[in-house]
Length: 350
Image (cartoon, rainbow, N blue to C red; front, side, top):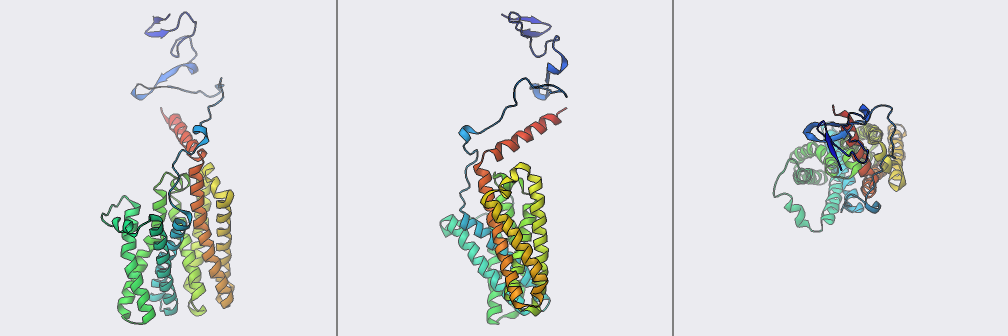
């Protein structure tokens, strides 16, 4: 049985007042928000009568569908694509500064890395025709579409530049193609960050602001490692400098990303993915320091530094890939951030 008092429907016979009963203290009343929705304003010092609800997924199952990408194919594609693009940029810089041996090594390395990355991508797609189908339209809002067209424009120029460097024929055309590949190589080295960020995978999506810098630094470090490994000491100066700069950017971006992600950064620190990322940082820093010091005087030290930089960059890419898979499989990294965002928006309402 209920009665209406001052326009408010109350449960009189049970003695339970409604949320807007004047008899209630202000902090216990419900207030009306925009759009006629009701919410309860929690005042400072209010004591919760029940434990705060803990949101979990159904039977602990993943909230998100697991990425269909395979680790060897796509993680290798991320690493080799970055190596190819940054190597073309290094080759163009070496060509413009009269370092032909470094330019030749970087051009050949870029084509080799490009072939490996395309193999990984096409193998993951299942049929080569699927890659061709992505070129049927150009959609600027789709990282996959932009990346496909980037690769389609970059590949022939990188191949022509490498062929000219190996055969010695058509040097002017090879030089122009090498510079064009160097310009496009910047996009090739970094667009994969936008590609994986444009997903619902928590680590990748929430780290979308830092990932392009991390990928650019990792790609530059790997290209510098290739130059140290293949070029003579007299021409390896730009490779050493780009390795130091790339490692510095990569390490700083990784630290900022872990701090900004908060609890979602746990896959970047724990488990196999965390170990891969730590080894990537150690090898990268070791290779950069060794290449900038002893690598300038010793061919052996330069080779060891180059190998460390390449392996370190590969560990970083594979670690990031596995961290993304882990964050998608654990519902905590999906539900908890969404709940925190919702509470923040609720607290900011007037």
